[in-house]
Length: 330
Ligand SMILES: Cc1ncc(C[n+]2csc(CCOP(=O)(O)OP(=O)(O)O)c2C)c(N)n1
Ligand SMILES: [Mg+2]
Image 1 (cartoon, rainbow, N blue to C red):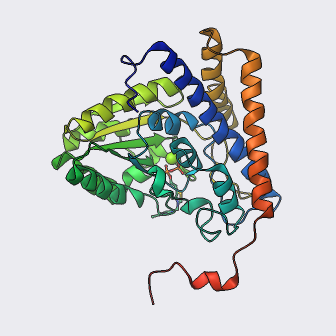
Image 2: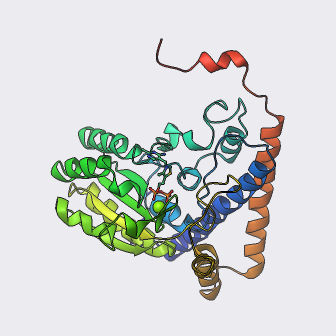
């Protein structure tokens, strides 16, 4: 599927926008449920929510083909779902069940599905960037026009692997997108306390590649920036750094009692810029969606999530012996 906006008949473009809205709302509802179930003790480990940032994953993944590859971060549910991961297997993984993506042994931060080009979430900040740069090199060597995409945070952009990867990708003109989700904080650290520039995208100049700043709460703006970068990458012109300015609504993780340095007014201000409400309102204004159809879509999403929870609850936990299976060291 080629998704170039101008080349698409209007019908396709309209249905594509509705699918993008559905994808964003699926991420939101999935995480609301995951958060509730985490607080209730049904989900183990750590859960980092992406709520508020949905437009980034969906805008970028809408510009990709199924066999293009992405890598995610510790905040990975949005990237997985936007690339087409299965709701049941994702929820079952959070629930620690055998039917989950990692047979219930990985949890929220380790979901991968190679069949849809999702190379994995990663608990190591900036750890995914060199891995997916390797996938970009593989795509270039294969010569089939695939691209590879790295999602990472503003905090990760201060780490060595970001700079090393982007340098080699720029030099070898790898077919890559580096997508920085600048949500203004890395855990409890204010981005401005560790970043001398106001835009991470400005760092692209140091590697001789384009750097673009996008409103990360405007899904179509993200989509268009991603499309341009994908075309460039497929044409052999190398990587682009796209910085999406966005914000997470929830605390750094779902663990209760965490300190959050963010002013309440700032959180409220960003909630007013809700990427989902904004997009739905826009589609209603354009006559592509009605209030009724929007409510129906939401009800269908909630029902699918309810099914995923039921599927998870009915699935068995891994047997103790499974702890020593699927490992690659003696
Ligand atoms: C190498 C490494 N250092 C520190 C941590 C602890 N840690 C987990 S998430 C995080 C903040 C990451 O911030 P950012 O890259 O901006 O992503 P965000 O959480 O804002 O999405 C930190 C420091 C880690 N997981 N890995
Ligand atoms: Mg951040």
